[in-house]
Image 1 (cartoon, rainbow, N blue to C red):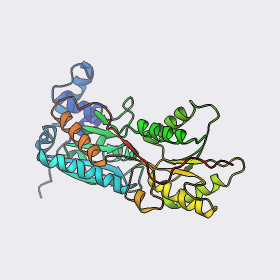
Image 2 (spheres, rainbow, N blue to C red):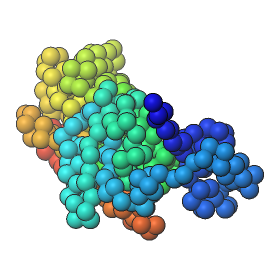
Image 3 (cartoon, rainbow, N blue to C red):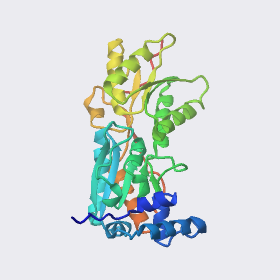
Image 4 (cartoon, helix red, strand yellow):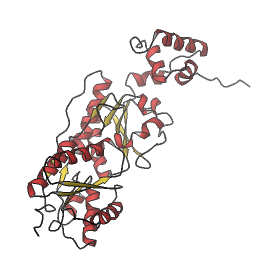
Length: 338
């Protein structure tokens, strides 16, 4: 019986040469000069010869951008927002003959299984939220053309980054509350190690800190109403002067803060002002309606897709953060005088 033939892959070449698959692609695609050493290039070529490696046509089509499929990797959190990101990305992709596959990281954050068996064999590129960045290694998405959303431009994994101007949104919140007369703040922070939440904490402290006599306390909670209720209730009931303004990293956290305030017999905004960030449908479903920062999720997705198309075509993506807007509603008022 004839033995089934086996075909060496670029991964086999990479292992034999002791280099990354990206290095193999550069060398065999004759794009290595100035990026890997002559010695490394020769080691890759020798390994390819010894293994009898020939580039896979499907992989070659992938490099040429012919699969016309993009993966959007998001956390399974604040799904309404990321549904908007998907809508914007998919709309622009369709105009250019691309499809977008939405892939939520199963646990919200952390590693994820490769949904394709080999993402590299099925995709032209990846758009990923920094909140789901850990999933990229597992699906080898960091070895494809990659655009990061909500990511530190100085340390991004991607060829391009696209950000909302979250820092300005937090500044708008702080300035609104300071103008109302608030000086004691509680920051209900998302308990997620992500750049976007680090920016919120840093900007709130920086802006409030410019005014003498102010105080910012921080308590952390998972992005869930239940988690926010527990964290906010404990913080508001703690000894010492009670904060007069509660700044939340997310509208879901703000909804939990409402429930915590009511459990303690506090009224929003008479006894405590509350702000959110996202402007989800939830923001106008609660009473009083929530003062929050509106993020244009669809435009965010469009910009992410536009940046990836630029990377695939060798162009420079559009620069500059996407503007955000504070929407003032009934959940904020001047602090009570007593």
